[in-house]
View 1 (cartoon, rainbow, N blue to C red):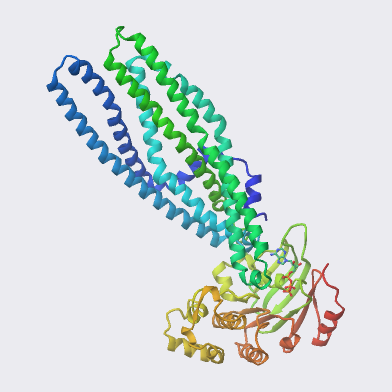
View 2 (view 1 turned 45 degrees about the horizontal axis):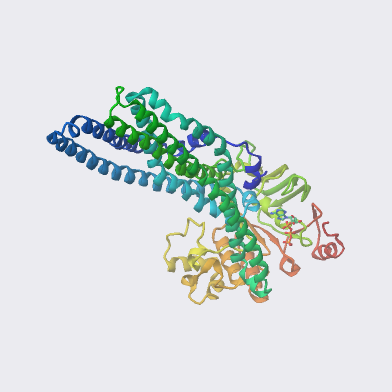
Length: 585
Ligand SMILES: Nc1ncnc2c1ncn2[C@@H]1O[C@H](COP(=O)(O)OP(=O)(O)OP(=O)(O)O)[C@@H](O)[C@H]1O
């Protein structure tokens, strides 16, 4: 399945801003009461701002011109009270919308992170971690910025503008229409260039994701970079990504600022029209006070428009960011669960029935593979590098589903088990064990509900009963030995030991060891062999190993190569097949 987000975005139909906004509002529908209250407060604030010029105009005409200073004082007091209430509503709206923005950021990040947990390995194979991090961090923040900072101004500006427009038309309809003339030009301009602005912002966000991926890759591989003295190579790659990001950001900056001059021109034109036409109208049912009020309303109409220019660009950026986020949220795992009513088979633990599989549809790695694994037996998968051993093991553990054919666990389709049940039954020690920052104890108990609340003493007893004490003794501070920076503080062999203990303690029915002892010395490796032999009689083991001595006790050896999994017979036969066996092309 195609999970490549960048390719998917090229293929996807471009969604309209309105459709995108509707989807986004759906996600924060629980904020509706706060949003509505904030809107009411914003409207009160805008109304107060709008009443000001009318009161000033009337005061000039009715009290300043006839020199009735008591009236002037009275209306000045009224204006002062209005401006004070305006200040309070301003504060309230900023506070409320700031809260909405932060809560939305929190909800969105949680939603994306939870979605990432549900997506299959295929998704992570096809996307760079850095780009995903950028979507979780940077893109969500763009939305937060819009919601917490711009949306208040956005709604406020629209309200003020609409109110000012109504006042302009009510005071003098013809002059009002003339004043709003430039608005038509601005609207045409906005509708025409908005899609381009959104596209430019999307490209800029994409290149920020690309740069983040570049940084993540070089930080992950810093040892190789230093060892091979390839700093220049990565510097060059980073330079290219950085330059690309710079160029796209400059372009986005230009696009985002393109509205402002056009909107300002519109505002100036309108002022000019009102001044000329207004002066002409004075004496003809039109007063100086009204003209002053009128000019203020024109400012109140076009100033928010100028603000909207900047906000519109923010909105376009937020919508481009939302497109990138909703792409992840819209994905589903291709590992769907099904119902299988077949009676289970207790003896036959695992069966592949005519399985075909390829990471990409056009390149099949396993062709029509069938084999069986019985409960309690030890199986070895051998074969040349790249032959398909890890792929076979990955299908056993259902990291992927076959393209065709069936994988049965206990006689039932493996897709009929939920993830929790399946992972309890199957333990998988990967070639590159994953450890996280914490202690040996935390890493051993990763994904283990049974012993999570045991004290160290109780856990040590369990470890002793599982014959793992000798392995734990290798760590200086036992269970409390700290593991830092993703396990880089210990050796690869030590990592493998922790992964081994972790898997054994979960007591799975099927334990897969994929080159799990490749970095362990021969004596400790023998110890691991003994521990494996002492596992409960019902535990089935699948061992992938290049060192054939590690599989000498296997009940059955399968040779995996050229898309086929065949019985190898004895260890010598396996060796023979390895020597003669052609490698995959
Ligand atoms: N995530 C992936 N995406 C695309 N192709 C892959 C992926 N993982 C493995 N392959 C390809 O599948 C084939 C089988 O790889 P696999 O890892 O199963 O081999 P292997 O027998 O386990 O090799 P090794 O002994 O080196 O571990 C190889 O050609 C490999 O390039």
